[in-house]
Length: 250
Image 1: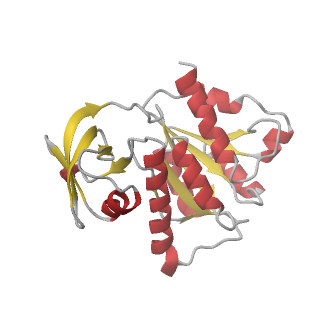
Image 2: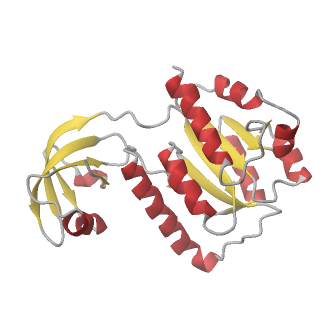
Image 3: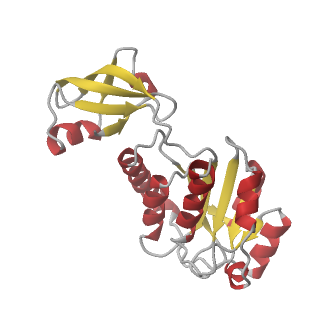
């Protein structure tokens, strides 16, 4: 069953009003008609199953049949702070990370980042990334679309660290040394509803100075298994580990 995110005010006690690009998707791509069923979410706490009542070029009106409780969000809020990678890797991280339950994504520029965002083009980049997150959230039956934060410098990122309950850093030297307990220990200290910041460096990794600062700020340096992971693979590893720890082992 197709799922769509709508504004809170679009869901009343009896019906849902869908506007914008989703109208084209419903009418032209899916070719739905009155009588077809869809699921709508307000991107917060309400998800409903609906039956389409009327279709026009401007809007789709659907009658609410029942309220749902999908329970598809991770028990903790995981924010992926991703060192800006080359090419379209960030799009991959956001698409797959959304499917795996990430709460938010925070791109940042590290000392070894080759990619630098042009401020004039950042708005369009964020709009594209938000669209990718929305589509992935709908496909994976999420109740919420992850937040895509504007890109930060490493110094700006430093100021954000206290906002999170726990922080882990993907550090390849820890993996090379066989470190295997830090991630599990961190997850074991987290309770449902708390937040976790996952810091992933760019292709060249973090510098010694960046690692020293992060470790001194209370972040846990972690090896994500015995293998060295690419920058776009590491956040997905962590999200899968979080799901296993909090969802499959409960």
